[in-house]
Structure formats: C-alpha cells, structure tokens
Image (cartoon, rainbow, N blue to C red):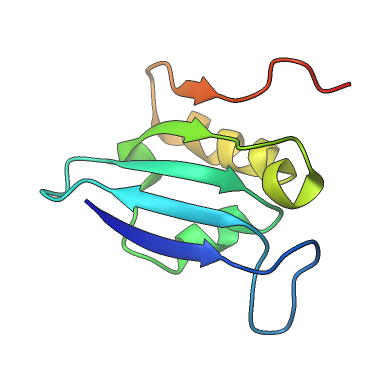
Length: 95
C-alpha cells in the first residue's frame, strides 16, 4: 500500500495546499481508500490516476469542515460511476 497526499493544509487551503485528504492505494492497484475529505478533495483526485470507480471506502477522522466538507462532491462523483454500496467510517452524529 502507499499514501498519496491530496491535501495537507490545516483549517483553510492555501495557494499550494488543499485541506485534509489522503488516498491509501492498494499495492496492486485494485482499489483505494480515502482518509478525510476536505473541501476540494474531489478536484484533487482528478489530478491523479485514481478512479472513483475503484474507491472502496471513505474514512472521516472527525467532523471538522477541513476533514468532511468535500464529502458531498466525492459522493456525487462516485454515484455517477459506481453501482455498488460504498463503505463509510466516521462519526454517526454531526451535532
């Protein structure tokens, strides 16, 4: 497995860094996992060789905007190319 950093800025994006998002790729290219999904992560994925079709699960470490505001966009992209359930792990309450 290897890590691909999609965003490493804390709190707010900068000109050169997006907010939190890390792709964990399986070593034989069978799929990948998304750890955190800050705003703009969907766009960052488009700059890589990753495919939304091979996304296996999304893990949200905690519910702060810089870790989860990109979730609606990612889910919309996945919905257009995947006809299976996607696993999600994270807090169940957003209050």
